Length: 267
Image (cartoon, rainbow, N blue to C red; front, side, top):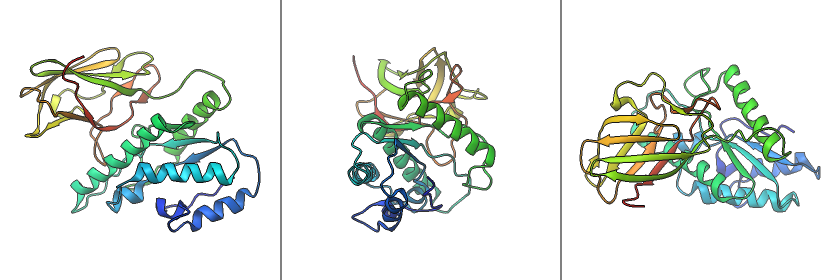
C-alpha cells in the first residue's frame, strides 16, 4: 500500500506537528489489517540540520500508528540512511546531523519493540548526490524482504546486520570494538591506511588518531596515537559520505553505523 512522499520531513508524519502526510496515510490504509510498515526517511533532518530529538519523535510516530491502526504489535522495518555525496558549505554540520539520524535509527531498533533497521551505506550507486539508484533500491528491497520474512513470518535465517555490542579499553593506547550478529568475519575492503578506516576515536582533547588496526572475527582492535582517556567515544561509518565500509563477509552486509559510543575503561 504505497503512501510514500519523497523529500518529506518527520514533522509531516507526526500528528502533533504538521501531520498532513500521516493523516493521508491513515486514510489510505482505511481500516485494512496490515502486519507492518516499511520506513525510509531522515535525509530532510540531516540536510536541514534538525536532527534533535529524532528518536523521541520517531517513537511517537510508531506509537501513534499502532494506536490508530489498532495494532499494538505493528512491525516497522526501517532503513539507516545511505550516503549523501554533494558538497555544502556547512558540510561538517550536516555530517553531525546525519550521524544523529543514523544513531537514532539504530537506537530505535534496540529500544522499541518490533522495530528493525537494515543498513544501506553499502548498497552502491546513487542516481545523483542523494537519491538511490534503481539497483540500490532493489538491494534495499531484498534486505527488507529478508528481514520481514524472518522477523514477521519466522522464516529463513536472521539477516540482521552486525551492531556494536561493546567497546573496551585493553591497554593504555588500545581499544577493542566488539560486534554482535557477525556470521562469518569482519572485513574492511580497500582500507590499507589506518587513517581511512571508517572509525573515529574522540575525547575531550579532540580526535585520537588510529595508528594501526586488526580485524578479527567479530571485533576490531585499534591502536591509538594517545592514551585512551576516560571520556573516549567511538563513531563508525560517520558523516554523510564515509570512506569505505566495515562488512560481515558472511552476510555480505555492512555493520550498522553508530555514533558516540563510549569506551568502557574496564570490564
